[in-house]
Image (tube, rainbow, N blue to C red):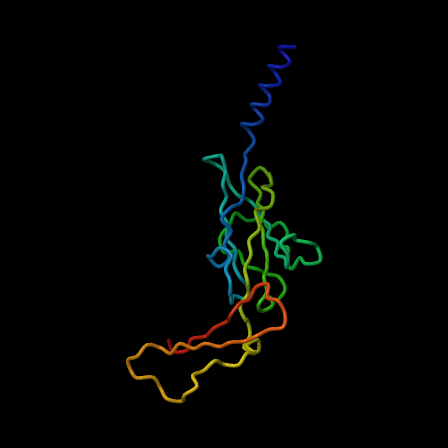
Length: 181
């Protein structure tokens, strides 16, 4: 019994030493973490890999999924790259359907190493698209009431606009342009 226990412990120790634990971290979209107001129609994704092995580890493939929800349900899946044989983990381009203006997209990635071992999915990250087309700008401009220009060396005018809504607001984005500042 003692020999069997010793042999079992020895095998477990060897197995744990040979297992290369790694995970995908630091997800960025266009060099930013969870950006809001992104105007790229084909955003680029990057990630880092954290591994317990100090040398010799190599990513050999990756897979990215993009979804309209954080659960990555099949009906809301916008793009699945499939397994792409590549060691690149920087600026991988979105190649899915056209993105919608003012929408939140969730994304995640998993990678494979040189031994074919899969990392499992990363944590979720997101990006919110800006207004991607001039036709999406539907609001009226907020302008000064007076036609008179401000004195030449005065600070820029501060403009405010009040509005009301009949529905509760869960969250809101204000798309603002400051032409000439």
